[in-house]
Amino acid sequence: GPSCYLAAETSVAFDEETVGGLILHAPFLSVFRIVLESGCTLLGDQFPNVDYCPNILTPTLLIHGKVDKVVPVEHSIALYKKLDEESRTPPLFIDDMGHNNVQLVVRDLFLEHLKEYLDVYVRSKTNSRSKKHMFRGSHDERDRPQGRRGGKRLVEYHNQHHR
Image (cartoon, rainbow, N blue to C red):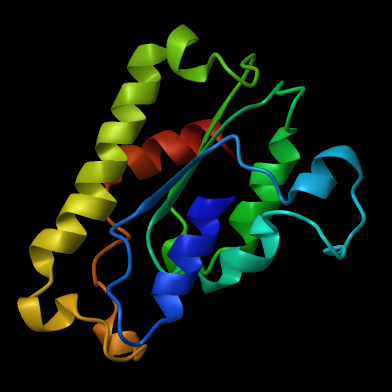
């Protein structure tokens, strides 16, 4: 909830630097949509992440168990589709995992994917940007971090397991 809101707000603010990256573990479209998929944001709905996602302009990693009975994985899939294409990173959707046990049951896979995300999308972004680009004074495409589509091992893993 608050993470999507803050990432979206700093992405569109002209006087603030955006966050370096965003990791969402078992995210939901909105609070009401966990219980009832209304197809739209209802008045009073808390944390409408689905509405914030298009404004998030930072590398975003989604992690979700495919058999999550609290927040169905379809929420992550829908959020992924709402993200700006440049903000999408290969998600980690894990077979036979539920809501609270992703990092415990497949710890090595979880940590490897997280390390790759940080190395490819977050650390490379901060290392490659000059100080003059650290302050987001415009939303011109030229000011966006370049080369975020790298990460051969991460992309290969994504292509093997998520198609």
